[in-house]
Length: 460
Image (cartoon, rainbow, N blue to C red):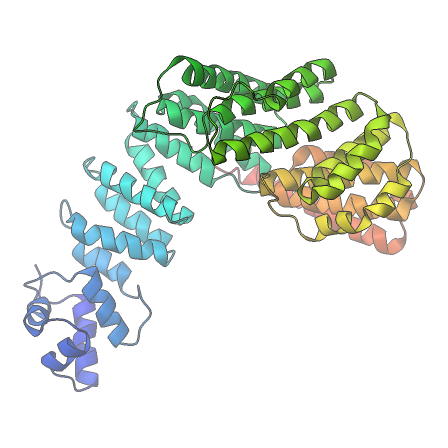
């Protein structure tokens, strides 16, 4: 062990500059003088807590010397976890992701560190320090890639969860990368994983995937709910019956999208009538009420989609009482209006404020993720553009088309981008000069985005 290091040399320089004795510096940094003397002589290693106190006394930001600490104190074979753990925790709090990567690179030649790093990742994940947790999960998964362990599967599940953001292409990549690991999870964790996967594929409109995952969820949830004793040491995040009911909801959505309306109504009835649920506690009652509400809303959607316009007044009244459903409900209504050619001008005036609020503040609403809300909002604005183009009201149409294209670019929703660009190319002659310049700028963003994606493919 050397007696002089970068950190200790800087500390010695500071003491000389401030004319501080060893005892004074030790007292001011709340370190035992004997301990501090041993540290300066290189006899004892500096801990992260001591380094933080010294850094604070020197009026430097926390973490200022972490890079040097990694080089000087963690280069030996098998560094002590008691020093590594607090360093990684502090790096996570400070979002020093490169420092975390350097520490992990020193550790993972020894697979004994993998369980420790995984447990720390779980702690950080629980604290919502997702960026730091992601680095740890990535490296643990890489070190155990040839294993078939539950820990490897959990790493991939956490990475999938963390990476469900706003970019639809990346969300899809993370979903298909995680899917093969689902059945390696504990059977209770499988329920949450399948539910989350189905939600992701639904937001991405990959209906075959939704149908497949819903069938897996239905089978596993049925077995666990009706045919087995529940393992008391492991419970899912929601009441067990909700996973079976969710599988019916996913199946119903797929059928509705495919135009199989009678089949969709069959599945809606399955989760509308939950008399088969045995439990009666408050949490169960809460979820039963939610599924009943969803069944009512989806009945409106299915009947409207089949061409039953008579349901519209009742559906609108429902939406006005359920503001979180406006973005979904308006999309359903405008799509139906475009498909069946009925006039909704009065309704659009009635809900004008709600539509503007969607434009100004896209975020998670109720049980819907921000990914889901953004996708639905982009499609809603596109459908509104189509509606007003059909009425030859081009200024309003291009206002909504601009909104749809902007959101679609933000979330990398390629199918909607293509539709928007197509409408622009067909009807661009109806744009005034100011609007034309605005759209030309947006179209340039589309091409730049595509070029960047082509030249720099993202590895997930």
